[in-house]
Image: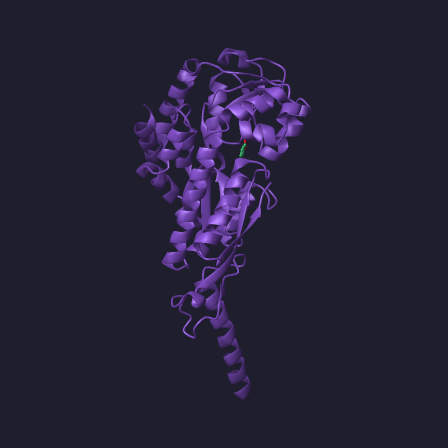
Length: 351
Ligand code: BEZ
């Protein structure tokens, strides 16, 4: 009996410690340390009693890409806004695996945040395909304002049932087309070419309807695929074309700006839901600041990026968007009826 009591007391102590840690928003990763917490486990009280966090964030791009710079900005904002209580470790370049792996880690709580492509998410939560509507926005500024619309927030909400909290969207340029050897001047010129797309049905549909064959490849596999001739070109953004040095292996760049390309900023629901409201708000405000930083900084880099690619030997040119209008219409006709949120998105933003 005595032995049982001793065990019981130890178990209670361990449980209390675990409770305090999780109550403060920490999973295995975000080691929330309740800085001398009161015996009740309450997270309120004076500043000294507020929880501290060591968060983890994962994303797919190299450290020179805007998504990473936005992650750095998020880190800085978290630190400042929380008075140093929130620290962030960033894992770029798919260090924690594919986007599928990252999302799984976020859902389980072993990673706290991710910036994940809407393209990948469209395979798990269908309404994300809305963001791949061709030519839905005139420019990044318009897309950045669209973050605040009701339908965009509703789409974020669809992640909840997967153990994820959709927080916001980051924009880092629109999509362009890069071609290895052929100067494509109109959609018909793509006939017979095999073009890389990020694996996602709306992207595949856009290119196949225009006459190209597609190969779904995640970002880390693209360079060698084009270098070895497995693909003849790719759907990409200018920033990624530079950070991944695709100018070494492709000759032509059509600045079509045919789609926006949001990173979806998401949090682990298991960890986020346990945080005090004040800390949730700090996170939301920090994300908002980072998202604005990303869209506005990137919007000012368009000319510089085109010049960098030209300086590195690529021929950069534009294709009249009107030539792609039939394929944008096909998207609306096919994807609008698939999901009410996609239809609402089209009705809200198509002008
Ligand atoms: C891509 O798959 O093309 C991509 C993913 C994330 C950022 C930029 C590009």
